[in-house]
Length: 369
Image (cartoon, rainbow, N blue to C red; front, top):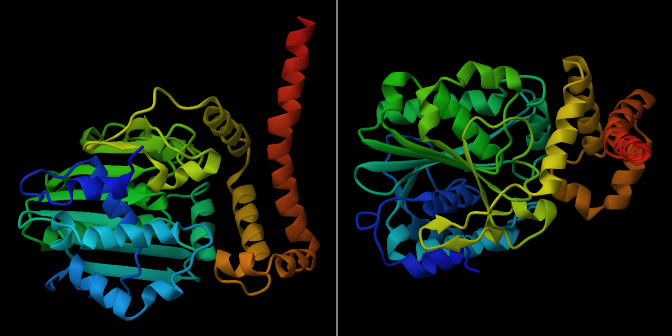
């Protein structure tokens, strides 16, 4: 079955002026946001953008592809997509500007965003999802006990600045994983006077929001133009509650690997819809709800801090650092203080009890009846 790279091969000769922006394009730009445009694109929103074809030439001439790593990022697929897009008539003339990539350990923030000008009247604002940095994953866990996290707050400021300072009449906002969550939050926080320029918001398997936040935005008109796409076996997208219009799509992968947007099936200008969310995905959503709802904010924060201590015990900065020497990582965990180990393992124990012991008790009760 075709994927987003096949889509470019099929529709690569059709300009955006001939065939308007669609949901598959949104996924492509969301994946392109993972490309390391650092030092290649200015962060100024007022500067002239750089064509994607030119960026590709610079990127490969500087051998960026040789040092491009990521333990959980589909690097090869992203680089293949970048080459295919840069070489197509539809995407090659798209210009990139306003690139921002910030890692702040103190603020516990991982944020990256950029603008793609697709026509003289339209801009795509894309937010990168969680990258390879451990602090990025720490920020994700922080979503469990407060909103906004730093990336969400900066995303809202970035989007409002883009729309207010530009003369474009149409804006599309998108992101994959955490990037999709930030895209949704940013659009909902954009002043109403600017929201009318937003044509659509596309969240691809991004985590949801705490119930308390969902209740504050349930009447927002922006939600009518906000869409969430998740693979039928979604894990990441099943975290917390969604506020968007949700659709499930078919994937050629299994389990957590379905989070990879390159495994999603494409037909024409659309993602292939699945009939419903899988049973295992629903069970995970319920498991998370049952455990997290019964945890206090302090317990959530303590777990987040303890887990971060685990991952950085050997001064690791990225997940690649950990994967490259798993033995050193395991030895480091054993050296952490007793309080940290107790916090992590007691929380994991809650999940184990909820998933296996309660399920077993319910099964035995049904048998007795």
